[in-house]
Amino acid sequence: MAIDWLISGLTALVILVASVVHGIAGFGFAQVSMGLLPLFRSPTSASIIFTVAAVVSNGRVWWSVRDAFDWRKWIVPMAGLVVGMPLGIYVFQQFNRAQMRAAIGVVLVIAVIVVGAMRQIDAVTDWIDRKGYRPGRLTGATAGLFAGILGGAVAVPGPPMIVYGAFMAAGGFWSDKEMKAVFTAFFGTLMLYRFGSLTYTGSVEMPLLIETAIALPMVFLGAWIGVWIFDNISERLFGWLVLVLLTVNAFVLLSTSLPKL
Image (tube, rainbow, N blue to C red; front, side, top):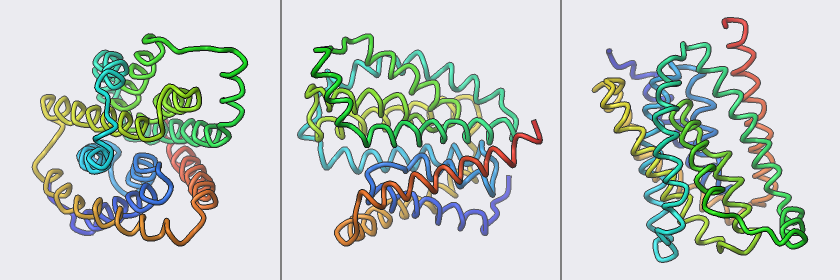
């Protein structure tokens, strides 16, 4: 597999944009990366490059909130991840290019709906107060299971954990900082697990690792730009704009892949 330096440059640019969005809106690294990369390169190679970038990105953010990390809150969804990830990797290996693009498009639509709904968190808080519901370990493990399946299959594991984490925060079970620490530890571990599994199955090739190394500095540059922009624009407005663009991106992936299925 030879390196196409134009594709490598575009890949680094997408990782930069994804990191900027993540730095501003607090979400979107997976959605932007896996929404744009399959438009100009194979979804399989895109997911491998994104996987390593996601490990670095989540590790960087986790370090900033490490004092709020509680391994007991992290281990519950991890129990589901251990089961879900191999299932997702198996599904990943069965997809052809068109199926992979369509699957990513569907998951992006789900992610947009979930993130949009969670931005109306007051309704969730009111429901929790009325019901007096306390989620058990099975809830967290189930979220980890489905996140592992989605993460292994299409490298976009967010929706199940976003719902779980937002629910835990809205109910007062986690602080916002604890949620951020658990999320970044979980997603970082998930992507590290995914990378190890794909390496073991022979999916990771040296040219992809070189392209990844080229793209990694964009994670840090994008984060710095994102934080700077965050201080000068409305986060809420930008967040909704990102959701609209992700929706358009998802339907582009679907419209270009469904005729080939």
